[in-house]
Length: 355
Image 1 (tube, rainbow, N blue to C red):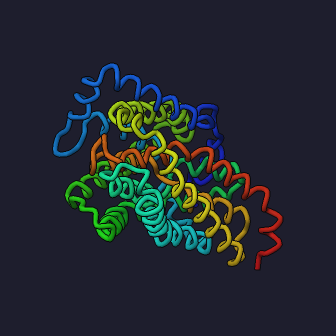
Image 2: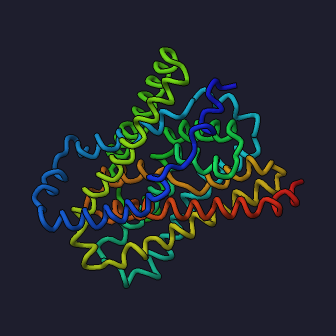
């Protein structure tokens, strides 16, 4: 058993800041657009600060976002995968075999066809790329919050997240490249691989090394103290990234403010579709509710920090791809809280149907 298998359950409560993340994101939209109109030169200067196709301000901010989240994850929990293999198999199937492809289909239906007349014609492919990036990155640390809210089995949640992080290292780039290729969107492989190395591989290795060092020197107390100190920093880095992005996107958004609402439609459908599929499959397989609940939530939520960073690396700050991933951030908390409520209220139905 992982020595920290129970840690997420103890530290998974949703604080005030996280609960109102949608409000903070909305404020960042307003502040970013306003500052972008007042001091556009500063934003363009920051947007142009790149080395080898990597924007340095964003690279720093993304590390501040991602590393504290990955610090919560014990890759040693991979040894627990076999204990809940049906729930694990369901979540992995939904995360990697259904979600990216269903999002590509929804993007093609809504962005490529139904909403096309209402969107900037030059950004259609970019919007679709952003949606694909969002769906190809399964959620990591925020899952501990959702699992705790549905009284999820902590061993399952920890092992599932550790497995997702391991799969992401090798599967994220090929799936993104495949789906973008099928959508006739050209993406440079070297930039995509560089994004995986910078925003997945290196942060995972760094976080695991830091985690082991903390545990060796101060045990659980030192780890929890460090996580508590880093949590506000991680969220502030996310919000600063959004201010920077909307400072550069402001003119386009002011021209067509309905774009954000239109992009939210396939994202919302995708969340409920994949959560419902994972929940139903677990019920059919006779999986305990304490595993089926978090499985549904893990199957539906996204690692939006990675999606935002990769979209910016591949397509730039002012791209439709970057905007599409940020819409994912905007809807993440309210839509996931609604899924939590559905899972909790349907517990009786779920348990009556277990094989």
